[in-house]
Length: 346
Image (tube, helix red, strand yellow):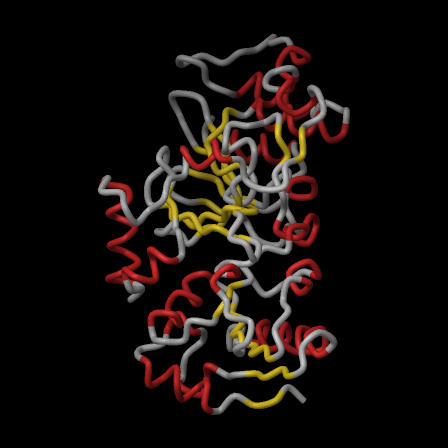
């Protein structure tokens, strides 16, 4: 589809705001209300896009729910599976404006288009599993021992650009995606080290998404969610007899470990779930979320919740060394300075 046709198509799906990039029209995901972890609340920023292609078919992708590129009927199937109603206006736009081998497809069977890929989403009930199945790890192998071009790119970025030690990388059991480049995969585990959730970051854009059954090519299975599982990044490596530092991002946690403080876990964002808090048996918790307005507000709420579970709750401020988050720390001296000035929460 041409750029204007893509915008007409997305408009037919209810999308009202667009952002043009080189060969894409970026937008808020039309599936967010059903497939994103935060539902309607995740519809504030563009995570999705449809490619512009003047000579062939366009594709849809979303870093949160559909990181693999899909042809546009994928959207029809997902919407129909959730609402039991076909987005007929969008299908009509697609049928009349999409380009197949240089030609449009007027007169296409709309009901036939809706059935494309629908079996994956509307078939027999999916089996719920308690952890990520072992078969998935063939698609997302461990990063440290691999010498492939994709693995080496990620290791080089983390070690040289983000200043993470090779020892920390190996201990964290990081993974990579064999089918897409420049994507590092972070395992979120329970206390025993069982992987509950795989979160991916596309290095150039910093886009984040979670490995779903569709991405893992196991549509018949329902994976645990971060919200329900209570998993953390680095949870199985914690010494619960010592204070535990809580940070937002996985890179933040690994930078802190590299600088000498091993007892740190990452929540995967500011919004820490009740299930995650239930997995913290620590006596002393140190809140170290980002030093921005959103981070301070999140720590205010988190402090009240932690106070009900932990004997001592402390707070640190990365602005004390002029940093926004621990991932920006220059050396161990800066980390030690911040920790030395940790103060009781209220």
